Image 1 (cartoon, rainbow, N blue to C red):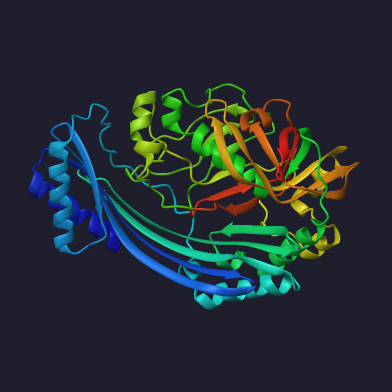
Image 2: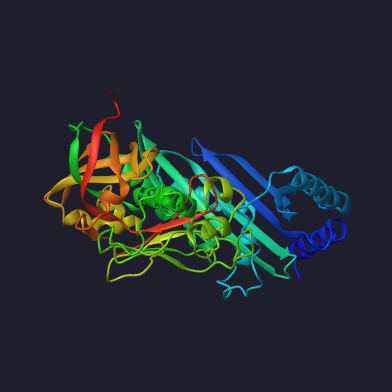
Length: 465
């Protein structure tokens, strides 16, 4: 039994003793250890590490629900958590949406755990930073390398219990030349998969190719989106489109059983190995197919949104899911035929020889008569949630493509585009054959994506004015 499962079980026993047999309670104890090595001006300037154990209790008593948490895990801290949560429940209004507790259920098979990543040293992260900086060959660089380890345990008054652990590593860096930036990102469950040399070489090749950018008029352009840009599509689709609360409240575009996307599009959520194998309500996680060959098949649910929609939880409860809705945590867009998931790191020699185009997008660029190669999106915001119209900026390199060849760098542009429409039936010309695992900018979740060749993207103005 893990220390976290023991903690969760002790809180359940405290609830039974203090609140009586009529109380329903679920408890999650999670130990998180995060370490971050940051660099700027081509030198490491920060190395930090933090380890925290958090215990969360949700209690349903006499038809009323309340929750609480603590990082004080001694007996006094646990007793205080139980007592104040009981007091909060008695003061809360009746909870007519209470979905009940997760019944006992077995977890899916373990997807594997890398001890070396969980125990990674600052030197191991620094080695990758040094390789990135050296490979940039004199260009100014900045970014981070991070590792994290999570161990969790769940227990409830139904007798359900679960435990698991996971590790994650990610690196994100830029190289800069005369104000032009090139970027390279990669995420994995194994630190050994992150290789600073090809990442630094790719970022530098992009920066060198991005100088002397021209401005193009606004309009609709055929585009190739590199995986770094596609990850933003996946993030917004997960947060606002495949969100079970938004779906239950008719604020999502999702229509189950309807072909809303091009037949080349298949998107799944693959949480095992990327996050704990159970959610905050103890529901086991598993692969969830959201889009299958263009047809919308599912949205992500916790127990509350599932009850509202008349279905079952998909294992996506989180501390914020009752407020913000349940959100998928490791979306993967299936690569095109001929390849599965790649290592996520392209050959640096090949990249250096072909300028800005990483191998994940090179074949798609060669098939474009006239359009844009876009590396990344930034500062994206929702204008209309129902149709998922997004506005944002391109970043880290845009190039004009003519007759399958990159001809010139283009200045960053603003866009306003419905993401589902951009991926709609007939709108996807091709999907890249190599998938790249990429870190989310703000959290430990991942997105895995190939490049996309799309028939139309609505560029609405130049970033310069």
